[in-house]
Image (tube, helix red, strand yellow):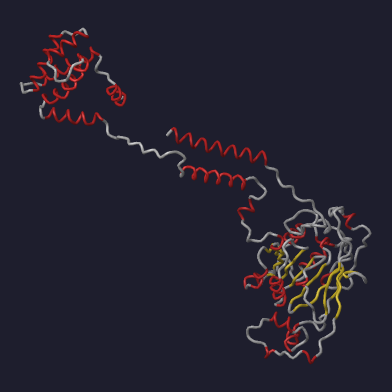
Length: 473
């Protein structure tokens, strides 16, 4: 038991040492400084480049907003039909793959509304609108010396921008303050494909051909595009809502039954710039144009491509940035090391210790009880006398089969015992053993005399007797 307590105490001590070492050596990772060169546009981020202020305001104003942490394909599920607006802010750390872009555009064609707030949106998310092609062009490139939390630095020599025309996206807006890093949205019409080249008809499409494949193979107007355009505006040209004659800042255009909105400066909706001019009102109009407070429509902010996907281990994410995970790993390694060392032999094999669980007195007590019930006092005396005679012969230096007289004489010569009394005692014991009648009282007397002889000669407490006596204690 003491050995187990020592092992447990040692393990607890090692764990305590590991805790102390990890706590002493742990240095919390400092959050990187916000920079327009490497911004963090997540709605979880409360820094100058984040969008947490906009998310919290929309949530508290009664609109239903969520942080979308799943792959874009989930938008096409029936359970996700209530998502009416999908917002992507900034250049996300995880790029939007081609399949993901196709899923988003298919969701828009079915009536969704995609809001892109970025200076350089993914080209896969900017499909053509009829013969119109939409692109963005960078203005001034950001530098590390600019503090995104300083409005004066971000808007130096930049005049506010006014609405181009009254639209739902410019409602209650007088002017908007962009940053000096705002991009420019450009679009231009490209020549139509000759009619004779567009020979594909709906009948030529196989059942396995998807709507996406058909659009990619036949970009020119076909009977299919004519049918689709029945629900679209008469002109597929993009609509400019905000900007000046040289720099459109806010544009939207139809795509299928839905619309794609492009805002070329994420600083307008960021924590550092949303409080300037009418930036907040513009953010509300752009993000929640078709979602009134208290309605069932959802505004989903993309967090999957910001590295907040649900595929990440929730347990590891909860303890991220703390010494708990390294400490758990060290404890597991220590346990594995103990198990490995316990299962391997590092010395010669030693046979198992054979422990006799039976007490020697159990046999003696059992034999004594049997002899007492059978009144075999001579047998009991024989067992004791045989041992005493052997001890006396060894003490006298004679053989066990020597005569009583010789043994008694030599014992008396080496001790203070009387030779004649010892010889008489030995003769009485041998006579009882050989069949002379013996009572219980006489047997007890003879055994007592034999023990007195052993005690006087110091022959009783041998090593074996001492061991038995210690076990009985």
